[in-house]
Length: 257
Image 1 (cartoon, rainbow, N blue to C red):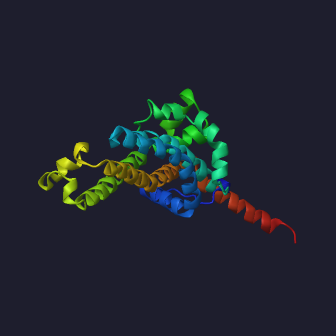
Image 2: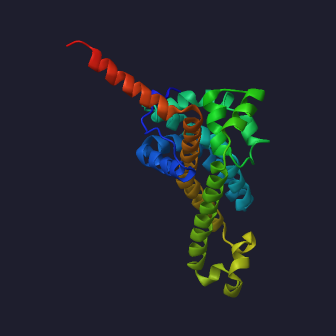
Image 3: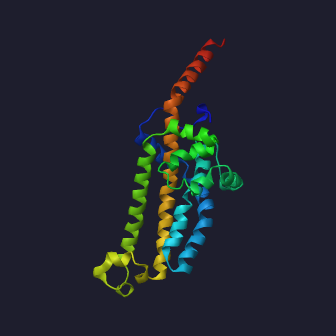
């Protein structure tokens, strides 16, 4: 990655400013991001909802949707990492890149022993874009590490569950009385699959899918912004670009007319 081809302003930012830049990236490139999201998430959504329906319980389908987040993240980063360097990626390009994303982006480790890492969005560009492996990757992670990714995970995780259970609670309160055994036991009934109709369990899965569809692109974009910001701090990208701009101006002035 060359800093002089970036389409975003390069300067040292605080963690929260870098996270805010992630939101701006989603707002700027949302069409391509959500086209890629559909390519990645829809093939998972149908089996997940089928599990909810066939097994009469939402926990298995929800677990599948949640567990495969590292796969969605790689597709989103593929779009973002090219968009900030001036390249447009559509859903056809995502499909062509899918085999490489499955094989060469550290997806297996991200779905197994690395699934619970608190810095998933920050580590992803190192795995996927820098292509370093083994001890070199561990050294790179140690060099770039910071506190911002953990705060981002806490913020997005909290927002995800607040939105999910807020929407479910609202829908549950709107159910007719014949669908619930006892209104005074509302909270216990809400967490008991035996007292909820099957269609509500499927709706639970749909709501969770919509919530992660709204939050996960921002989570990936903010993690990528934190990564770019950390590299700017350590490698002086803003200073390098400043010197290049100054050199270009001097060369223009010295060129004979």
